[in-house]
Length: 176
Image 1 (cartoon, rainbow, N blue to C red):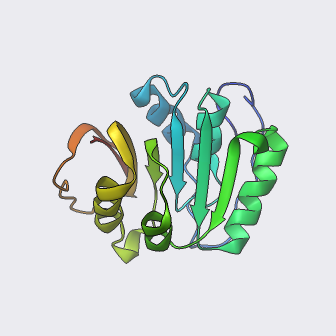
Image 2: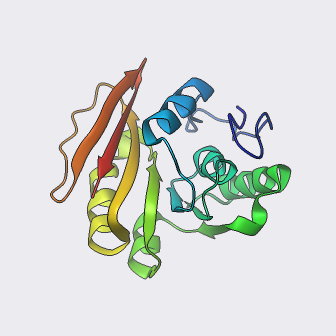
């Protein structure tokens, strides 16, 4: 896993080990950022951040600031190491929290959110709904990763911009 483009292009990122972790593959990451086109000057949230690969890619491509949230200290420590490795730590905050506590306690608004929750836990729709009520700027985009076999119903207040499958992974880009 590496940073695909931008100021930290080519930097290899650390990745958590274990079956419960699914880092976004480079070709999927490249496709996601092609869908988004520009991320310059955006305020980014990488919820369920894992290794932080998507948020770090956004920072490398010109995002203003990123918040990385994960309930795993192990994952967050890897994100911090990756931020240091890419020299992007001054543009980032790392928060050890579950998604619901973070959203409910947060007052910051975001323009771009990456959501890659554990597939089997069914957290995606709840996270999108909470974000829509509290944490998004108008026109915000949400990049949602899920198992390609899952049925997904778009929550009220959002429209689908893109919906693509990459093997067993499905990426849906929503707009508020």
